[in-house]
Image 1 (cartoon, rainbow, N blue to C red):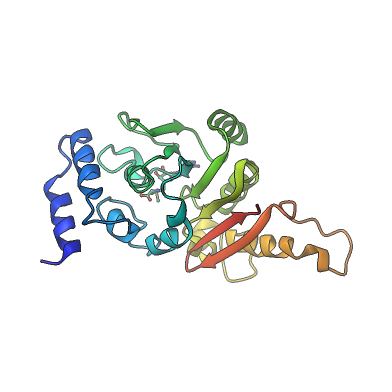
Image 2: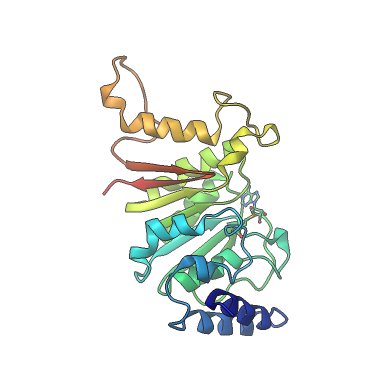
Length: 243
Ligand SMILES: C[S@@+](CC[C@H](N)C(=O)[O-])C[C@H]1O[C@@H](n2cnc3c(N)ncnc32)[C@H](O)[C@@H]1O
């Protein structure tokens, strides 16, 4: 049996009837040298949709070099829709892959029993600027924000405006599931329609270049030079804060 299959088999056998114990075991198994550092392997042992979307390789590309730092990570949308057996899996994956990190989650629907060592979930909406500001002030500078919440463009923009200023220089602000920008059910449509998240990505690229504009009066969505780079991929963007 191949190595990955063996690891998956082990993770399945350690299945979820007693949640905390399996997690501790899973964590221990995943730290064995045979599993290695690859998020593609570690991530497969957690029930997060990030795998199906093919995001692991990209997180690995941008963040593997800082895995062992004591990072502060904030993910919006913990998953599971309030069901304790599914909720918080991506938070546990971050906790395992970033072994010295503290991982915070924000969600409107949170079952009990999510918090554990190095994981804390705060109940609230990403559309509530006051809540986001209080959260950011409480948890301090953030190394990685992952927006995997409502995917409604007005929420995505509100959250970005509130939290990007709290990202450390060189840190990342990631927005997942950009395909929703093209879906009417998420306020999206064909290219050029409305204030979608894809349109925000374009505005950020414009912002990086605004000093070359001929017309006066262009106001970038976030002050240049705070956005250092915009790495856009299939369905996901990594916005890198300037150093
Ligand atoms: C796709 S799931 C997150 C999956 C999880 N991040 C993972 O990788 O497994 C989306 C989550 O966003 C939450 N959500 C929806 N609207 C929200 C809002 N306005 N504020 C915060 N969370 C929200 C939902 O309750 C749901 O848990």
